[in-house]
Amino acid sequence: MITLQDVSVLLSLRVDGTPLIGQTNLDWAELCGELLGVIPHEGELQGSVVKLSWLADHFSQINNHEGNVEQLQRFTRAWILRFIGGVLFVDKSSNKVSLRYL
Image (cartoon, rainbow, N blue to C red; front, side, top):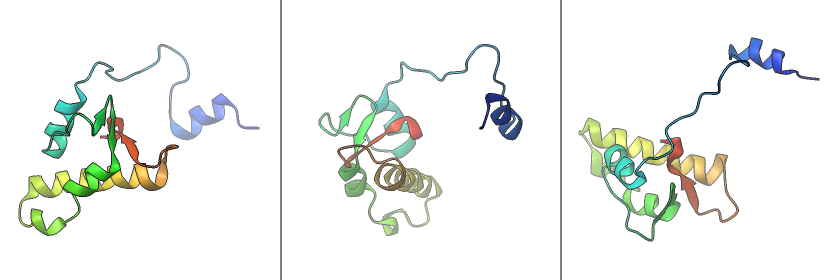
């Protein structure tokens, strides 16, 4: 049986002390605008969750970002989000992904 100590040794993680958590009071629309360059409309963003169809609509053609490194980075982030939400961590609706992965 795997123990907490095994996980600690294998992953070099501390298992004692205070927990580490990230910031929870983020403005998700602002974060999306900063990292993806586009702010979703009200119906496309619900809390920290964005519709996969919105990502597909705005980031389906990589040719639109040719030669611009910043745009290519944004496209890559959006593609990774689509992959996480559509393949790796699919929710019950199969049409949304959390922006926490950004």
